[in-house]
Length: 491
Image (cartoon, rainbow, N blue to C red):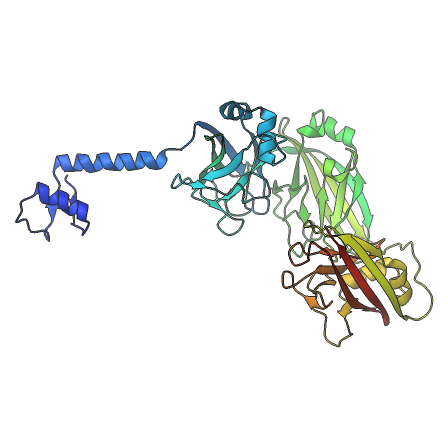
């Protein structure tokens, strides 16, 4: 069957048809294309398609990355690439190639991207946190972190490969995304083509071969820190039939009895009923395991969502060790009891006080937001007649307040790390980037109370500046007026 086209007002098309049809042809009527005309259109379409699919590169490396979709993790996989071939193409050593990518010397290598849908160059070397790597949308085109982002690729020079991961909750089962990371050096181009396949987690059919019962005593915490909890590592490995924890994956138990396989830091966030339902503002605690904790192999960490656990609360959580090799599970069945805090300090005696102190902070100008600190622990404890833990809790519940210049009846509006402010050259509160020279905030933990802050990399002069301000800190009927002088010295 022949295709039927309507004429359109395109000059080149019109001239072609005028040559093939009579001079007195009525151009408003339908024209049935001949077989030769159809063949010519097909030929032109094939040329356009070939141009669209062509990758402008002297070397093309192709890899596949299968990613298990997650609703709350940026997880993915690691893909090592053939840096030897790229270095050979560029006529440089592998070390020079890697240093060039990292920006630490070496070869003059430039990372960029090639848009999948158009095969056009995108000159940005990165839209991620790595020197070479990008966020990609569903069409395989470069994007930023956000609503359109589907997957990312970040190159690690030390590992000679890409971490390929996902934006949580954006991928769907069976989705495939192709994208092209690229390098150029010495007028030569290398393209690394990725095909990402989104897959769903497989069902866990393993049986629980043993259970270790563990009881943990804790207290309400107001910071995101974890503490070590010991389990019987030797028995767990023996029961699983594996030799080391490198053969173990971690699972959490959800409310419906199924397993949460989306481990972050080898652990899970648990809700107030103890189920591994993921992170939320109503979460109770979390588990964590591995080298990043600094604990020995027979310890895992338990932490809290700050402020969500009260004295008297008891929660049971289940933290599972799973071996895919043997299809076995060892369950860590953990009872967590929340009691009173055993405060090592005693609040100073007497009534809250009003005091005034002079504080000077000095640091060199830099662009890295580095900080300096000033110890405020004894001053605040003595003024408020509270322990460090009590003051930390007061900060968390907004009972401690900081004002600039004068105490006010209304609630303070902090503009930096809470509680704290960005300050302009007059020492008055401002927002970041609006003439903000420095920031000063109050840092708190169970053991420390300190003022800290740094300089704005753009608003503050590299030649140095000094800002004077008055911080008024109130809590529990006490008040500390801080006459603050912050000197940023020349770069």
